[in-house]
Length: 365
Image (cartoon, rainbow, N blue to C red; front, top):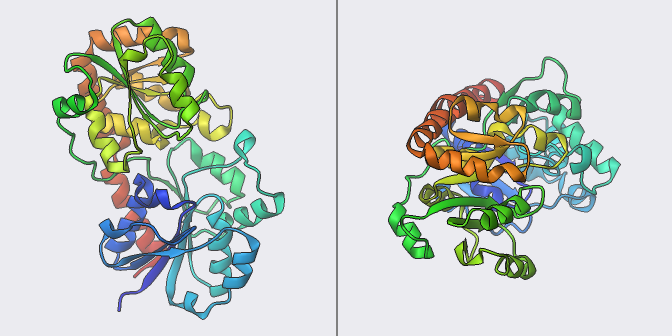
């Protein structure tokens, strides 16, 4: 029987996200079976094969106190989890059952993004992070932020694995994707993917649609609010707006995004993690992997976008129209720049190999 590890997710929808895909795959490559815990416990993990199971967990004191003493935890060789709430459970399990802890710090919930959990609970989460044999962050600039927030010791290792798939899906056929969505084959298309709000450039998107008369906007919007969708349908230029009718899976969203000409990657929030997005951004990694240049909000972690000539950095929404014109005028070269940035800067393949080796060293087989 294979040894097992327990991996805890904040929500079930993260089961196939790029960083979790990498960590679960690494555990499997090292010969472990993996029990993936998340609220509810009934979610699909079948793509990983028979050695991965879905299990239920909750992130609060009642569940923790009721479950922490179960003898079944003894079967696990290590406990890993995403930040932040799961680390309260992961850290406690590691201490009680004397097993290594691995933190996947896909979120750093400090500053204005601290959330509404109590200070006591957050201290328990941070204690779990401090117990880590290995910490994984998704952008180099976030290493220092996570060290400071979690109170890690100088000797505790932190490595980087970005918000991208180690094996990206194949690009979908451009003409087919556009035909299915009613997008003209010869249209210049700006793609917005993810949560639609002010901080992610929602107003910039609406302004671009109104300002550039032949621009088509394609929204892979993670938002169930009928009011938001209704208002978007009523803005000037809405006849050139194409919204997905349902949430796309992680890999499907990546694959079909190849049908866009340019992607929007905007983070206006003032919390530290949003001002140090870089290759932590799933949408940025998605566009680059599919050869789609980007328009991004200006921050130091995005400097490589201009260095690789795969996009344009802007300071505010008034600059988006000119940025779109620049991308359109240099589209073939910028598409190649996007692929080059994915290959030479994001480097999920080499970073994944480093992740496997660090887990081997810290946990073994």
